[in-house]
Length: 517
Image 1 (cartoon, rainbow, N blue to C red):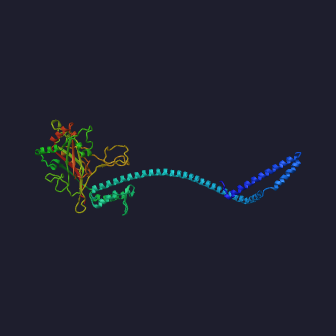
Image 2 (image 1 turned 45 degrees about the vertical axis):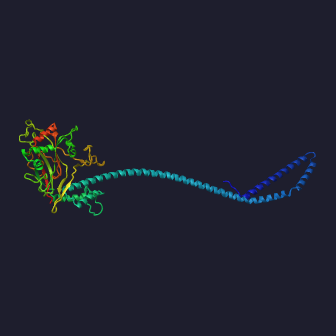
Image 3 (image 1 turned 180 degrees about the vertical axis):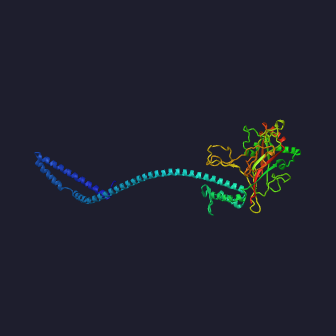
């Protein structure tokens, strides 16, 4: 650091320097003169010349200007004054040096602080990066666990809702405002509830969310009582045969009504049964593998359980069949179809053989045709008459398959499901269960006269199908599908012979019903 004294001090130093130069010049001149005198004395005439020179020096000394003497005196005085200024200058120089040293120490301290902070920041950044990586992994795994839990919870909620719908379908008791509120609580549940050893437990709290388990436990408790109260453990069984010709279409039996009956069959004939949306959706493997049209007959009818009406909703007449409304639910155990006067049917008969020999009849058909009977409308039942009357309840029944929990074979059960669940299960949740075709008969005598087995339980008869078990006999629309390909190799020729030969179509129902009180 450069030290700059004040202006007065600079002037004094400058003047002192000049005086010193002048004095030095004088001293230099006197030395030269002395040397000159010495040289003169040593010469032969040195004494005389030395005496002359000494006189001259004496004269010159006497002639010195008084101003020079005064200047020398002033110079001495200034030198004495300057000694105090030098001490002050030295003290200030030392103070400035100390201040500069303190400044350098502060700079060094600041640099050390910056280096320490840089090292701390690097260490903190490394820690933060590690925490960030662990946090990302934690969030990733946490999100995966939460997503898996949410998927399984939603699946449990769907199963619980399906259980509630099945409970309502069997009992008919959730049609009230309180029943609908119970379903809404089940849908809006956000907790699993209490489950002990896989059994849902009822939560006695009146506040909060009892969860899915609480709702399931309540339905289970009511079901244990309703099994005996509504008669689920002791149903009534019946075997009933109804005629589509006389009871549904009101066509006279015998030859007087043959043309009208043939007109009904001809009107129900279609060039391609797969063009019907219900047939394509609910009939199993009904389409031709080559993509060719599948001619056939589709008979549409409805059923009801109403006082004063037969099964098909016509005014109850002589010879008609109906089901009593005193039972709140009448459900199907097995169903069979009889194609009266079908030529060539391979029916079991005493001694074997066939009832009609197709080789001697121009309308002979294949011995083992197959038909579909599918419900496509709304199932209806009455709610149990626990009081004075029961209300009519209707359901759109979705016949779906429960997915396999593991599906170890990785089988593809449906190529076009109408709902795809999450990846928690390999099979879509709402796969539609299609109806298989079954064999009809050509005479009602084939069906067993007894609907009960040796144990007293309902038993299906030969050539009956149990695919509709549990479905209500009361449905707003049924479809009986008769593919022409099962009659002859030429389906159109087979349908022509069928319309000419078959005189009636009977439906044979084995049903069970509950009184509900």
